Structure formats: structure tokens, C-alpha cells
Image (tube, rainbow, N blue to C red):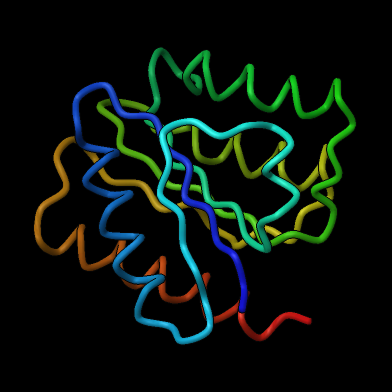
Length: 147
């Protein structure tokens, strides 16, 4: 059984809607357990085979809480090497936060990231939520195939 974490932050509810749809996609794959969380203890991250972060873009950056989480993981030398990583998020005008997350996952923590991040502008519509489900399903399939 593979353990899958969807960690997200959402101020307006848009990224939360995306996170719930990604969770639905993950649940379509057998042999994968998924946790959808707003907060996670740093030490618990090592228990997951895949970590997907949902974060909106504010002022051309990721949110402070998510940035601090990654800084704390680095300071405590928590090993995330070779875990599957992915990112998604909503945005209004720029949308770079999920890409920044992937860069950190890949370059700092040596995670096996899924390219490219999923972006949805403003409120996810039904087509956008379908993309989120497919995104979750694809990452879960990749995770379940990984030894």
C-alpha cells in the first residue's frame, strides 16, 4: 500500500476545491491510501511515498506557511529523496507558486517530481476539476508503480 499526502493551503477556497478533486483522482487508483491535510507534522512527511502540494499564488510567490514548511524540512534535514512530488494551485494573475514548489522538491530535496504543475485561474469550473482528478489519478498511478 502506498501512502499519498495532499497538503494544501487555501484562502478563498479555490485551491481547496482543487485539492478535493485531486484526492478524488487519487482514490481511483487501487493500492493507494490518501490523506488530505491543511497542516502536517514535519516528521510525518517521511511516512508518505508521494507528497503533492496545493498552493495559490499570492504576489508572485507561494504562501508564507508553505514556504516555512519547506524551510523547516531543510533545517531539520528531513529526507524526502526519491519521494514522488507534485504541485497545483489557483491564481489570479501570475501563477508561479506551484512551479516554485516543484523546483524546491526537485533541487533541494531530490524528489521525483511530476512535471508540470497544474494551474487553474480563479475558481475551478467542472472542466478544471476534471483536470484535477486526472492529475491526482496520474500521480497515484506513477506512485503505485514505483518500487
